[in-house]
Length: 401
Picture 1: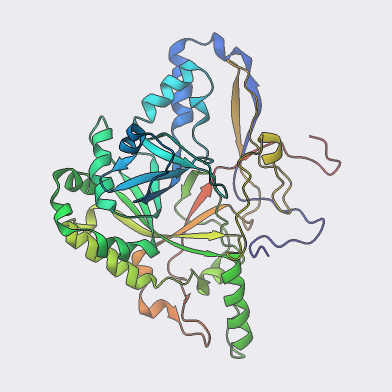
Picture 2: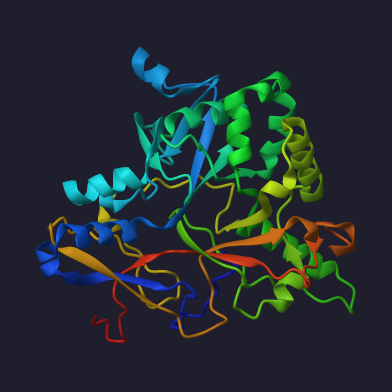
């Protein structure tokens, strides 16, 4: 059951996310001077992305010795979900590809995986340290990776922004050898990081259980937990960050369930890790990123990576527009992106919330009879990361575009 997007039959929802309509074309683009075309390519590339990555000790069995060496970063190998949306400009034409490769200057050999499938292949992951956030969903030997990745950056920066799932923080601290922190490359990379997100996660399955249990055992004067405006996470990596969620979420954040992790304890582990690394915490902005998914962990993950663009198009539940992946390969015609803001303020949203570390103090924890994982963040209105959903044109009631 989808907690955040429950609608009655025939009811239409407008998403808070902007529409990025890609059906507008500009055939005269090829007639522009090269300098203007290049500026258009560069402007289109300046988008923030949250890229999910995994560090493992193991490797696929069916790769060559050279490939095995390429994807190794110290004692770990880099795995990335190959179905994530990498920049389309790498595939438009040679001119756009050249601009994209210049922008995504760091290129890391990795294993490309496919959700729900055993298929793997060795490929290249291009990213930009200033705009991209590497989200380590699973991690081992993080110090090895941070030490090695700086060698792939022509500017010697390595990483500016990264995130780690909370369940991995203590494991990283306990397994890494403190002597690795003395490596000059690691010291240089960790001191280059400016934004760090600790990712707390839950899903509709656990959220529904907690709401049902807490509300059914609540005292008569207790305020029920609704949590109806949680932004729903998407696999699309590009996002915009709003410094304040513009919706009326007062009730949601006053009774908030953020998952089963002991978040204050994990924050303490992170601060201890920084001390072990000899890093001044004030040099980087650290927040808790709340990631909510509409999924049941008891069910298998469906694999749709083999489907073409037409089959991957699907209607957002209750919404009046389609997620859209343009299948046009005609070049050099450029597809323009037209942005329009959803008119309502209390609409559901695809994305994530971010909270400051100081919000997770004991005084903000609520004591419910069933769960101790409910928080009152009335004084800590969250930032909202809005996923840049590619959409097709809106449809009217008759279904005409």
